[in-house]
Length: 238
Image (cartoon, rainbow, N blue to C red; front, side, top):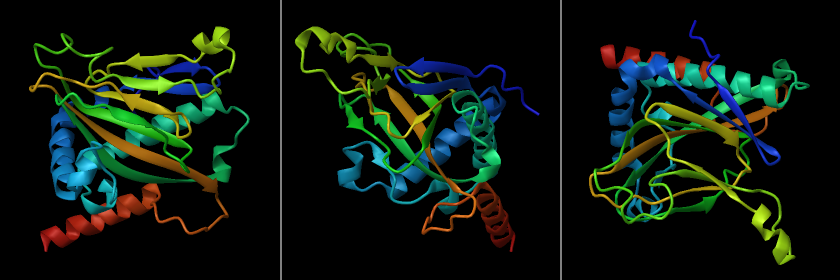
């Protein structure tokens, strides 16, 4: 069992953010980056590429792999830590969790990922299998190149003297890093300008419902994802 004592929980305004390095995936990190790259190119249309995203289909169902299942296991473990630390009064046995995974890719094109939220999802788990900054990165960029930026969710006060409270938290992810944060928390990404810069994010929306709530959710539980992966493997062997 992998130790997850390295998880660092930040209290950011009224929100919590978990940051960790998934060292147990170091041996498949580049494999995951290549799989994500292939998924991104196959499912991202021209208009979506302008927003640096491919979220029309879940990577977990469309392109399952053993490396991706290992990432799912790591995410499950860290989500458990997040719930335990952020919501100690919550009973995880009362919840049913589903996972929908897609890919963001950011190149050194000088484009921002505009502020947005993952509406309808309780948590977002973002893993960075590849973070490469070109030698000239940071010369012309605003802020930290490629940084994941969280925006204060509290309303901006009308009084100009209080506006300094509406701050940002920005951090350029390390290769192999995982960030888990609430889906309501607005976030964006600083641009990168060096043509050699390349950053890939495998993003998993985590949605919780009550265990007895069937609903109309089309996302999959971890058990469904693993069963689907096994079936896919059997089909390929045949």
